[in-house]
Length: 248
Length: 225
Image 1 (cartoon, helix red, strand yellow):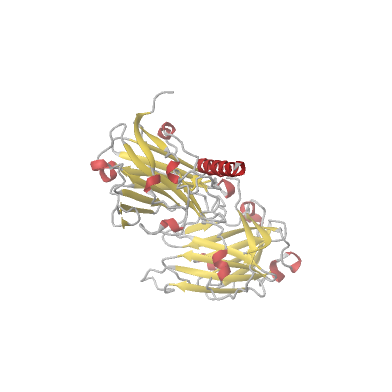
Image 2 (image 1 turned 90 degrees about the vertical axis):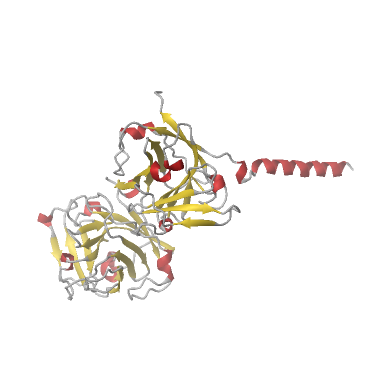
C-alpha cells in the first residue's frame, strides 16, 4: 500500500514537473515592439545612418523557430513611423550572401532574405506579407487565412503602392553585412488606409532566412516554439505605435 | 574593410564529368562562395555569379553560374584576350607566396586563357610579369549556355562553366593539397552591358583585378561533401 502511494506520488510529480518545463507554444508570451513616431527625415538608401534611427528601439535577440537556438549571424531590426509611412530596417551580418533572383514577387524565401508580416486590423483576418532580398528585390502579397487556420489565399497580385526600398553592402569577409531600409505608406497598408492613432496595435512578425550556414536558418522575432512556419499568425507579436520617444 | 573572405573546399566522393552541367549530386551539396561584389566594394552587381569548388586526388573543380541576359563572344582561340569581352576568371596562388599565382579566364564559347603571373601584393602593375605561353596541360572545361549565344534579339538566362584544374600543374610540388592546406585566390566576372560591370569574390577596392593582398583564403579539407 505504501509503495503504491509512493509510486503514485512519483508519477504525479513527474507529470507536474514535465508540464512546467514543456510549455506549449501558446503559453510563451508574445513579444511587443514599440514603434516610436519620428519627426526626422529618413532617406531610403539602405545605409541606416540617419539620426532618426537612434530614436528607434533596436531589436537584436532574434532566435530560430524553435524559440531556443541562437542564429549563427547577427540581425538587428528597427522600426519608426510618421504621419504617412511605416519605416523598417534590418542589418544582417552575412559573410556569404546567397541571392541570385531579380524579378519582383519571385519566391525570394528560397535564398537569403528578410521578411515582414503585418496584420493591421489586429484580428488577423488578413495580413500583408513582404520579402526583401540583398539585391533589393521584393515580394509583396496580401494573405487571407481561412477560419480553419489551415489554408490561406496568398494574393501575389497585390502590390504595396508607393513602397520604397534600398539595400547596402558593407564590410568584407567575416565583417560583411547587408542592410535594407523599407518605407511602407499607410495609404497602402494602414487600417482604413490611414496612419495609426497613437497607441494603436497591430500584430506582426519579422524574419530572416539564412542559407550559407550548414543548415538553413529560419530566424524570428517571435518564434513558433516548434518547426518553422512563418504564417503561424497566433505567434505574431504586438507592434505598438507610440508617440515620439521621450527624452531619457 | 580589411577582412578577407574564406571558403572551405570539401572533397567530392563521386567522379565529376566535365560537361558544363552541374548535375552531379555533389554540386547541390556544396555551399557557394557567396554573391560576388562590385570590385570597388560598392554593392552587388546587376547580374549574379555563383561559384562552388570541390576537389579530389587529381583536380580542383570549379562550377560557375553566371546570370546573363545577353551571352556573346567573338574570340575563339586559346589564350585570346577574352577579358576584353565577357568572362569568369580565377586567380589562384598555390605556392604560399601570394605574389605568384595562376590566372584562368573562361568565355561563354569555352575559350580558355591561362597564364602565370607575378606582381607585388598591392597590385602595382609596373612590376607585373606574365607568362602567357604557359599552358595548364590537362585542364578540362565545358560551358553550357541557357539562351542563344551571340543573338542579342532575345533575353538569355545564364551560362555555366564546369572546369577541372589538375594538381599536377598547379599543386604544390605537383601534388594534391594536404588536409588543412591553405591557398589564396580571387574569382571575377566581367559583363559588358552598358558601361560594363566588374565583380569579384573579394572586392579589390580599386579598378584592378591583380591585387594579391585582397585574395581570399581557400582551405582544403579532407571532409567529403
